[in-house]
Length: 110
Image 1: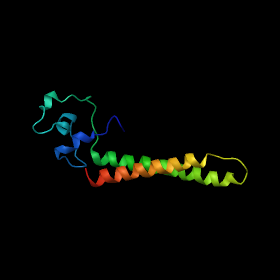
Image 2: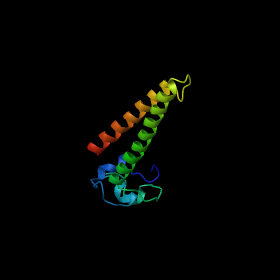
Image 3: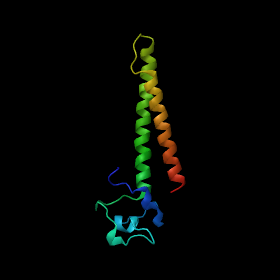
Image 4: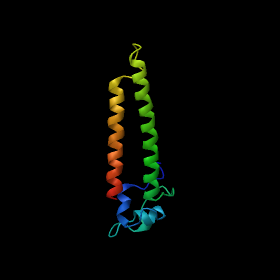
């Protein structure tokens, strides 16, 4: 997703969440360098809305994995062994929550 995602500094052009544009069209800033001087990779950029949906899907998939790891940890806790350390699981939950907050803020404030 990182290669095809629209950079944050390109979102000020007023293009909608679902509008397909070339990198030069999306990333040219009014009063800035002309579009022929905007240096981009030439890789087509997905619209912000599609990128947001993909990120929600990926974060949801990671959250399911963390949930399963938490369940396994509780199952193995009574056997005397750790499936994964509680600190590592806590760190995973904190990171996924921060990722979801970041994505929610970006969704509400493009």
